[in-house]
Length: 393
Ligand SMILES: [Zn+2]
Ligand SMILES: [Zn+2]
Image (cartoon, rainbow, N blue to C red; front, side, top):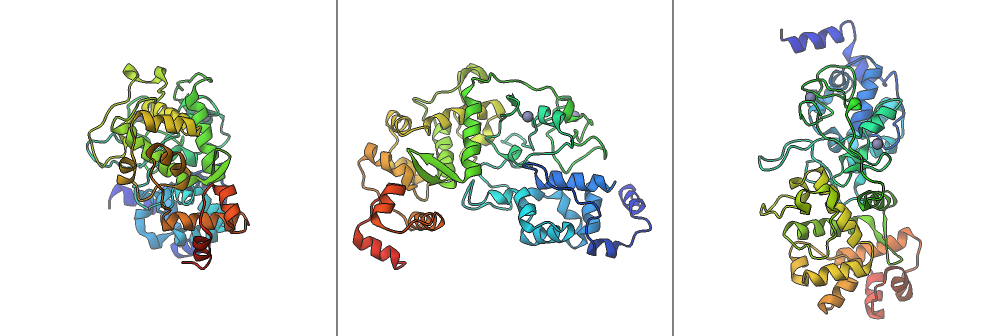
């Protein structure tokens, strides 16, 4: 018998596996503020004095041993959410909210169960050209936690620093450089620790950032947009995912060298520059380290502060309709307004956009009239077109 199997057998000796699979978790800790599902599962398992993968195997034998090997925070689909709700007696929403899937409709229109989400950090290696990514952590937050846990936002690329402690997040061991992964452990104590050398992340040293740095304000602004689901632009609400679409697009522009009037914070970059990349098909953020990402999102958030900054950036970099529409399926209406001013091209609303506008109005209980469309979203439709929209054409 293999060592691993023996350990497993020892841990469940004298226990009827089938009755465990059908029963609730005996101990059911409430999720903490912004807690990530995998973190909550680790805590729950340890409260049962069981190692996390054994715990999952016992309670969810139908998933086999694979469950813990995957990126559970993205992989947790409707049926697993339902099972976890049964196991805990919690409403499904509480479980769902801990998954990264819950960013769907907020961060992007769709969240994919694989590692291909624009702003979500993959925890697995993608290719040889790209650095190895991992779950991020703030050592200061861990030091203050009564119960140590991982935050959902620590899986986002623009979460480069902790806005509570004004310090950079870390994603690898300070002793041996190994990236941190929640599902890989050296031992069953001292969570979270380095899977290679056992270094406790709680004891890691933090690198602090000046509280006046715009980058910290930028992260706070991005969190406000994400949590609220709305981007307020020139006093008009825009769906947050339409904003993040455009933010993503601008990272591509910077990647290929459109950088005039981009205000990079100098203290965090070598030679005060971001690398210009030639690697196609790889998101720019994946080529940057945490400090470079910090400077990038700081500069981009500043551009999106107002119409003037966007116009200036587009004009100075000679960004044309062609350039933007080449890599985007559609251009959100909030962006089109001043963008048209630069390009002097009549803008045509796509079917998806009209659909989004209608959903928004419905959600806000606003009557569909020409006047309301103009007032709330700054777009004008002819009466003839309005009637067509009303009829669902
Ligand atoms: Zn912190
Ligand atoms: Zn280590």
